[in-house]
Image (cartoon, rainbow, N blue to C red):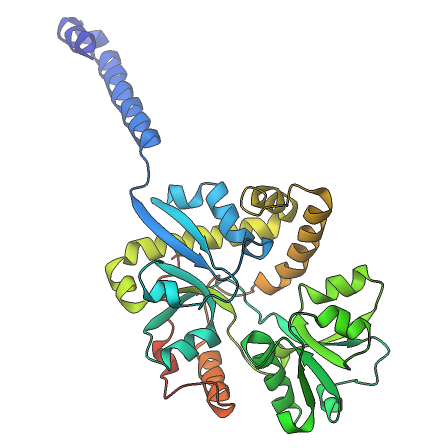
Length: 340
């Protein structure tokens, strides 16, 4: 740099502009090197409410593609163990962000946990009723007197079943609900039940592999339900607003990349999901991912949720006894932190 400065002092008038340009270019290049060497200084822990799985591919992709890094944050994924309380870690301050559903957010708020849903990732509630293709059950109304298998009276499959029953004008007493754990596939294959509730991007694929044709009825067609997205505590949102904006923007970029490049998304996920390097498991993961893409796609603004859907969902959850107390749905979410 000193040699360039001495050259400027000695340069004839006609060469002065050239030397100044050289000096400017050198400074610019030095700045670029500094930027390239810069590392994110903001640490963010994202809680993923299940063991590593391809359903979290948008997060893995956003990390592997450098979207979080480019946004100035370094993320740590904290996968929950089976049976772990969904919001326990974020309440304890061990997580900054949690991947959770809108109904779960309302349930937590009704019990005094000040959570805010800031961006939707799954744009369609993913569960539905599954019946054999030759079943006489042509609609949820035909469930009266039938046996329905669910993992238990908890979670999305239970909420989804109650939504379908309500739309059909039925109650829980009108059907025989069996808690069968996560054995929906063998239970229906063996005709232990007439129908099961499952995830539309999972169980139908397993039935297809078993050469067992099925029909499905989506809970989302019966009741507006906000599915999984990015959720934070209100005080975290106040203290780390820029970090949360960065997480949202990078994650939504990961969603879009995964939608457009599912095979590559599976490859990128191998770093995060044990066993995905096995050919059969990778093929199964791709099938799940391709079935999940319609649940992520939106014709609207990525990440945005509908206030009317929140109000409808809150009324529904209250009617079926899933809230622990009064809850103001308008305080449970915001669209203000989405990318411009």
